[in-house]
Image: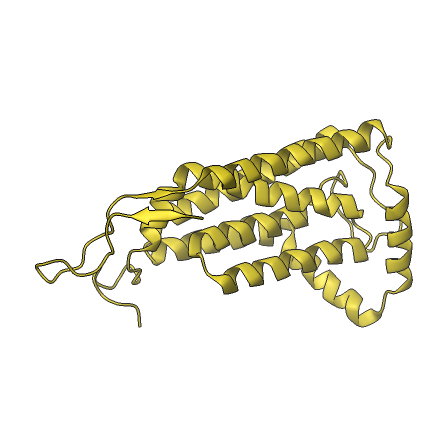
Length: 242
């Protein structure tokens, strides 16, 4: 992301701090990347429906067989924990609301708005594609999932949260943690037999793509907000965080 600032956010002549001047953020490459990710999902779904008759690719069957043979009690318990954390009300309702409230408490209303829209849009697109593709899930499955194997809802939820928070905070450690969380979620879905590999890739593309597309029109406000101090709402606006 590139941006040119008209102000530094440092104290002004009167000694008080002021908001950074308007900025211009390079949005087009990121917006195009988001659109391309969603187009890739549409093409992959089309191939699954038309060419594969909603069945898995041959290499996915081999991969699923290998993962099932390598299951151990310890790894299975870890994967089941990820299943709990990454889906249902906890991931789709409780966690997004908690993150949105936290952003508001730390004076990031634009970030809270962006995050909420991105999460809702990603969930909506994921559900729509599930219904349109109607892919059958693997047979050797260790959990009780909902309808439709493509795309993976757990993977899309992890990807949209990771991408959105990475774009909000612009910190390397946030991106690294988000990528690790998303990859672990994708691996756990295949390990549990809940999804084929292409399902998890589709989920990744939807989550990241939606987060980028929604971010583009709000980019300048988010960047400007990120440059401001963020004390908790019950502290003075000019106070520095402890």
